[in-house]
Length: 264
Image 1 (cartoon, rainbow, N blue to C red):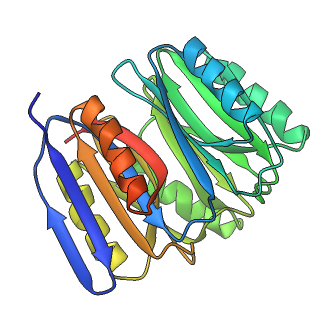
Image 2: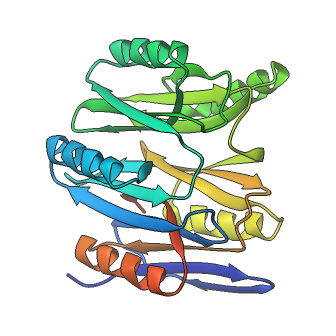
């Protein structure tokens, strides 16, 4: 398969975008200046196999940073060097049952650090030691209502911390104490516009911390004071080449901090 690669980099005042698009892209967000001392990447076709990979990584001292599912593939970023003290995960096919599990985990002292939908199931990653406090969960039928929801939540002292699309609905997580400082959220109709928007926001002193795709929309969450010194994201339409590219970035001192996939 012909390679389609998007590279967007910012280093001090130098911006180097390259634009080569494909209908579908695997996207990896990389950064320097992260707290992570080691990192791993796992990919499995079925969630059962991915769950086994999670357990092995946990036994080896890693924590699960990010989960992504797309094109019949479950992927995960594993790290060492964060502040997480304990992790758990759960999956449910029904969103109402999934919300009940999240509430139970919340009462147990866990915070939701990542959510994903794939192969007809909702998956949640829970952690202690994340610093996230006072989470609330909201389900949206249309992302057009997201700006108003964010504005109303801000009046209550809540910050948007995570969003994921699945089964025709958007699951949004707000928190009284988030991982992010002064978060900024954007909604784009294509990956090309998402890329151009990101360049502008980088120049305003923000860092990209989360990418999500759903129902032909690319959503970006940006924050300040992340500690990242340099960010770059690569988009490739062949998974084997995407996997190889991750290793190349590691050799150049980058850490993988977020995964996404979707259509341009």
